[in-house]
Amino acid sequence: MNTELTGVVVSFLLVVILAFPLGRYIAKVFKGEKTITDFMNPLERLIFRFCGIDPHKKMSWKEFLKAMLTVNLLWFVYAFFAFLFQAHLPMNPDGNPNMTPDLSFNTAISFLVNCNLQDYSGETGVTYLTQLFVITFLQFMSAATGIACLVALFNGLKEKTTNNLGNFWEIFTKTITRILLPLCIVMAVLLAFNGTPASYDGKDTITTLQGDTVQVSRGPAAGMIAIKHLGTNGGGWYGANSAHPLENPNYFTNMLEVIAQMLIPIAMIFALGFYINRKKFAYVIFGIMTLGMLCLVIPTMITEIHGNPMIAKMGVAQPTGAMEGKEVRFGPAASGYWSIVTTIISTGSVNSMHDSSMAISGLMQMLGMLVNAFYGGCGVGILNYYIYIIIAVFISGLMVGRTPEFMGHKVEAREVKIAALVTLLSAFIIKGGTALAAYYFVHHGNNDWAVKPSAWLNNPGYHGFSEMLYQYTSSNANNGSGFEGLADNNPFWNITAGFAMILGRFLPIIGPVAIAGLLANKKHIPESAGTLKVDSLTFGVMTFAVIIIITALSYFPPLVLGPIAEYFSIH
Image (tube, rainbow, N blue to C red; front, side, top):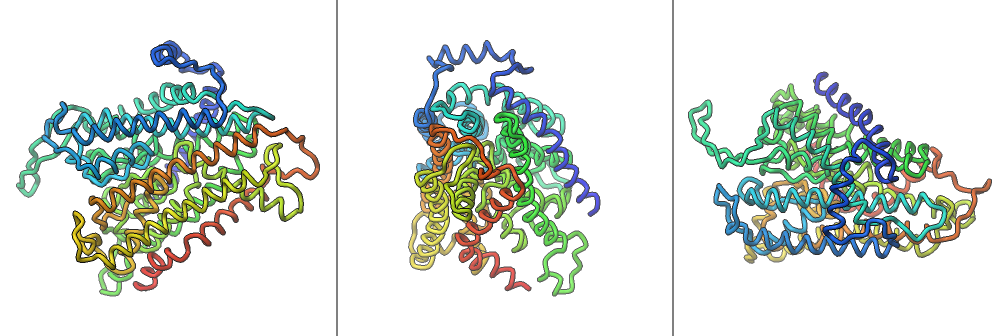
């Protein structure tokens, strides 16, 4: 167990050590300064020329969002029809079938919005063509979209007064060519040399130690798994995700993958400080986010290491902790750490089954997604945190009796209304969706709609409620992990979760970018003795308190009905 704990500490320290120089590099890329990847300039110019794009055109926040939303709509249409007719397309050596319209709808949205909620099994639900040219393609696009929108926020904070948040197409393209692609190449090579498949062969016949014959799916998985984690996507090549021995072969790859999913989100925090020349502000954000992460990961690791009290009451020893749903090669500590990292960062990949987690662990996982701002996904984590900052600035202004200001701009009613709307709509999506599912489950249990609601849940009672709550929480947070006791591949879940993913992705992007654009267009106010110091520890603690209060007020009732009630029922 001491070795497991050491592995967790080393993994986190390596992330911070790597993220700091990466953050400096990212800031240089978007500032247009000289970097080691300038050799990509000819390729970028070719792309711009071929697409008829002027990379130097200035964009207001409305123009920026219009470009982002338009191209995302185009990708959705492309993905939907590709999944719908994949059986008739090439590169399908295993003969996998077409998706149903509702599953195609759900899957296209899921990968478009960086959620990667997989209501299908990876190796049997899609073909090599759709795995590579739809899913892997969208994993690059969705990660680049989130980072591009965050850089728009950076541009709004950097200038005293401006109507220009940068050119979406230029930022988006450089994100792929200068950041995502180089990192993915390095990681894919490391995975391939450690046993992850990288060929186009079909299934292989394997004879097990027991003498059984099984068919094992293969394929060019290494590259997809690299962007899956570096882009905080999370969708697995295999249905078992990173618990699969080919997707995550050993403890080295386990550390590599957990480091990869944290790397860019933390690097973007440091990049913020370098980009707007406010490093202390970035350090405060990093400190508060790390505090939030520790508040979730420590209880999770403790409860997983101590094991299941129900088994202990039976007089059965649990020397290795709660091992149900976990890989022996990783153990409860590393699995518990991964489960929190993957939920606070919106990756959603799993190296153990969250449905088998202890009640406290499930609670911590859901809290990480409900806050959705402790590091968060590529770009969107800081965008979500920015909403909390605006609310904290507004409350701080009320407390001292003066007009709230942030970075030299007055925060007025319009900006606060947008921040409040984003926060309230997230709560409405999660609680409204869960209430709808619970109502339908109770009142239509004997009706058939592809799958009887009575067959949705493997676990009735408190844990069954948690399974439904987790699904909408994961969808809204663009996370994609799930309590897999829920039978989710049916029209009800595919359609309702699809709409939850759309709203949960674009509202928290549109809101912060709009606020940044509105504030940047206002007259700059020089700092004075009464100016709120947003780079102080006091303001950091204030923001943390706002996060706790908003989350508690919004989600305490459903959490009581689910994981909290389950915890008390087994103790």
